[in-house]
Amino acid sequence: MHPITTEDMTNEEKCLFTSAPEEQMDFLPKVFEFQYTGQTMTLFDKVVDVWVNTDKDEPKILEETTLYVFKTDAGIDLPVQIVRKTKNYDNGEISAHTITNYFDFTDEISEEEVTVEDEDICEKSNDFDENVKTDLKFFHPDIPEELDAAFERYTSHHGKHYQDNEHQIRKAIFEKKWRMVEEHNRKNLGFKIELNKFSDKTDEELKYLARTFPSKRQVPNMLSFPHTLQEIDELAEKLPENFDLRIEGVISPIKDQGGCGSCWAFATTAAVEGAIARTNGDRLLDLSEQSLVDCAWGFGDEGCNGGFLDDSMEYVLSHGIPTEMDYGVYKENDGYCSIQNMSSPYRIRGFAQVTPHNPNALKLALVKYGPVAVIVHASDLMTLYSSGLFYDFE
Image (cartoon, rainbow, N blue to C red; front, side):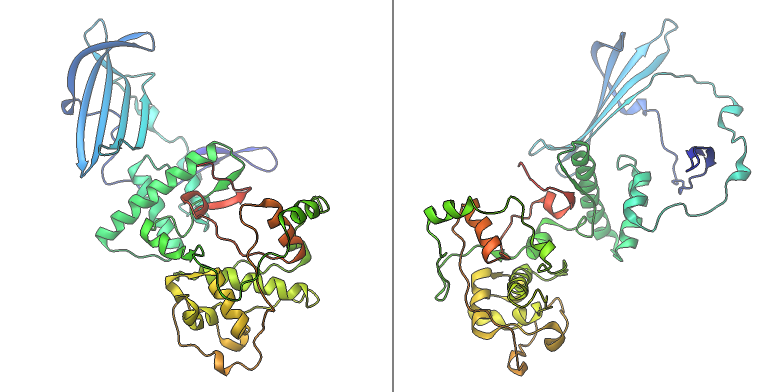
């Protein structure tokens, strides 16, 4: 039970139900697990004895716990602080670090201290929002029972089901990402991250989804950027201070590539949709990403296994892109090419590579010719991105 403040600024009692663990949490350390180091130090103006416990919980994972104990004049040992660290002893990475301070301690508890005054106001109900992001505000990753409850809500929310061994692996990844979210958002760096459907994926699984590759060669029909370096700098001085193609209505809504490494197809299709809209009275078409996944193999792309932006543009230049309505819905996997059955695919007149490492050239390309398809490194932070101006300093 706890108080809440309503919209009318009045206080009400609120009940929060959570599943009780089979074993109650130990707020005090098990002293028989510790060894006395023979060392003393001053902590909170008290001279304390230092006790330690080291536990190799799983391969490469080491849990170190340090207990600081104050001995009273009556010879009674009282806990003052306990520090727990979980780290990888191969690379020294610390994955968890908790400090518990004991400011008041007594071995006698009255019945009144553990009695709920008015438990009738509590009605058994699920107070958690259907949105898992709201649910997690009530949990803490440092408490094993709450980690289990949070991961249960997460998997239920995203419709995921794992067997025992995989469940533990996924939960460990989820815990790591959860801690990353909390640590990052406390820094107030200008953008926020949050847990999402990727938050229990392995690095290998995420790499499979990021399969747009940098160009390694000059494709035959790719044009040179139509401005010299001098022209770029001169024209950049005349560019508007602010420019947003979303306001012009030529940027497609965000789409989901699912479990297929086809981000290259989505980037290509979105750029072509915007370019056509700018020359077609701002009429935004919904073109078929699936047609690229199915049909662009002969130009160097490999469907769900990845592709190159210049190769996919070369394909569009030669064969065009039909609408999704004509070709069929996106399937998240490789399929048989049906472009020969399309009577009027949309085509482009050409494509060019923007002068690399030149911000003014990129601005000029957006204003005069955009949208532009680009490749961005999908770091862990970007995978968890939620809102704000993204900038990954690392």
